[in-house]
Each structure stands twice: as structure tokens, then as C-alpha cells.
Image (cartoon, rainbow, N blue to C red; front, side, top):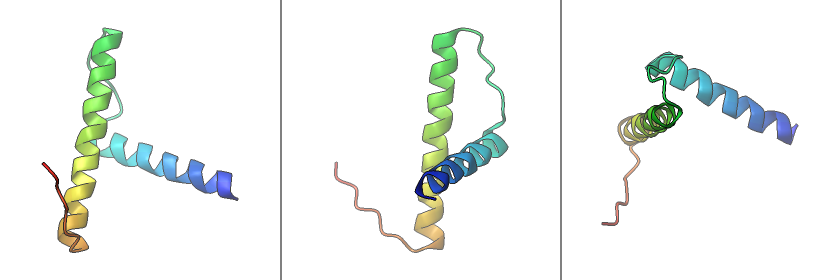
Length: 64
């Protein structure tokens, strides 16, 4: 059951990223595709963070 829960969480995150940012990569070069995918992941994480801040009233603790 522990293994299934991890897989379920991964599949849910993949679906959320694909629905928000599209399911295809525009670049043809493998390095560019990797960069594009990483940018999509970062953008998704930022949207989740912003959602948590506003909906759950989470206070971010940013250390600069």
C-alpha cells in the first residue's frame, strides 16, 4: 500500500503539470527539452506554493 500511495501521488502531480502547462515539449534538442521540462516543474512548484500561501494561510519563511 505504501508503494501504491507514492505512485498515486506521482501520477497526480504528472496529470496536474500536464493539464496546467500542456503535455508536449516544443523544443527538439534534448538539452532544450530537459530545460523546458525543468522550467515547467519549477513553475508548477511556484504555483503550488502560491496556492498554499493564499488558500491555507501558510507563512513562507524565506532565508536570503
